[in-house]
Length: 275
Image (cartoon, rainbow, N blue to C red; front, side):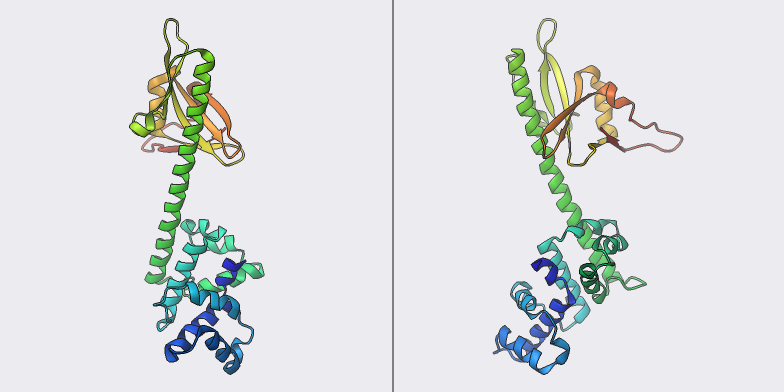
């Protein structure tokens, strides 16, 4: 609730007033500034000064709102990256998607959307500074998502290593699986394990995928599929459902029916497959 209140104009407007007051009265405290503003300006009587005082403590000190829109945009950028409200994930998909995600039709959404509009971020036509603001936030969100997916992928690879160690032990194969993607990320598979062969253990090459979605979905690149075709029956997909840690194994033949075909001048690069 605190994060949501920080993003309302009721709190932001009061915080701006406090910062401006302190610029003119540098010896005053923030509490004294809030009290003086409430007493002298009826427009602030219903403002959220409790949240405004919290904002005063956490906002960068240089934000004194001499240039209102520029500072308000910077303030919102700081707060969004600090609080990470759930709807921030919509930012890379465009500002109308953000408005839809926030929920313009309810009071809570209107409060947050009002702040974005007050900062000139929904002006039509859109200004260059607004474009730059949206682009910076989009890059930050994508970077966070990439980091999260990397961590999720590594967690799935560790699960596959544990699974393969136990499987090899149960088969009596005196070898250990190798975490190939740590050594060579261009090898075309993540884990080098083994199966029982006619005379000695044979290679079992594992591409590890993970998904937190229901039903399970994975993204497969054309390069990954090329590796799967190259290794054929030695290649297998480990698909982990997280956080349940449920493993689904698929062979190359089982995945083949989901792979698109290049046509004319068009060529596929990635395909999403429902498992």
